[in-house]
Every structure is written in C-alpha cells, then in structure tokens.
Length: 181
Image (cartoon, rainbow, N blue to C red; front, side):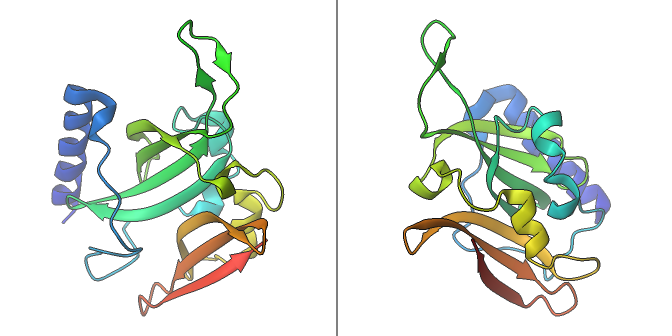
C-alpha cells in the first residue's frame, strides 16, 4: 500500500514537473469522494498541527489560508489548500486584486507542494473578518485520534464570513458539518 501511494505521488509530481501548473487535478465533487474506505491516511499532517505555521514557512501559500480539503487522487492522499495571493502586473509589480488567490496540492505527510495554480477567490474567501483558519480549526474540536478535519471552506452565513468545517470520525468514517464564525 505504501509503495502504491508513493508511486502515485511520484506520478503526480512528474506530471507537474513536465507540464507546469496546468496539471492541478480537478477537485472531487464531494468531500470524501473516492476515499479508500477510510478518512485516516497513514502519517497524516492534521490541520491544527500545520495551519498556524504554514503561512510563514511554505511556498504553498501566497498568504492567509481560505480553504483546504483532504483528497484521495490517483492512489495518493493530498491536501488541496486555497490561500490569498498577491496578483502581479505585466512588470512583476504587486497589483491590487482582492479576488486573486492560489490553490496548491500538497503531500499529506510532508506538506511539500506537488502543484499549484492561480484561482479567483469567492466573496467569502476575500473577507478578512471573523476567525482565521487556525482559530476555526481549533474551535472545530479536532483532536487526536478523532475527529479529523477533512474540509474547511469560507462561506457567507447571514451576510458575514464564516467557516464551514467538515470533520470525519476516524473510527466510523462518519462525517459531520459545522459552521464557525
């Protein structure tokens, strides 16, 4: 199993190397789609473990995290992470564009980037008020060994930005959804 997962990551990484940013795979239609019977990959980095430090330490993000999802694609576990990013004009200068974002695919164990591309942020993702990603993850009740956050999405709730968080019970694979403002 470990060899297959590693081989899948190598295939994704090789495709990214050969063809650039255009190889970011489409997200599955639903949270948990195509999971191989469990929501608990081996050697997983939990969101409450990495959300606080990742923004300042990794090229994965342009800025603040505005969404993430645990996915199983091509026999590999990955995190799909969305963040605010600074747009650049034709001269490479920073341009004012609050809708500009970045979506990155990263290895669940090492958080090493496998692919990334520019995205347009939703209205909720552009909002800076309310709880940040790390605070929302802490408020979700994510603790070892369960529940595990498998998705965090910025949404508008009654006209205000909020987090819709999906957790998974690692023993039963049952999902729960909550909203945190």
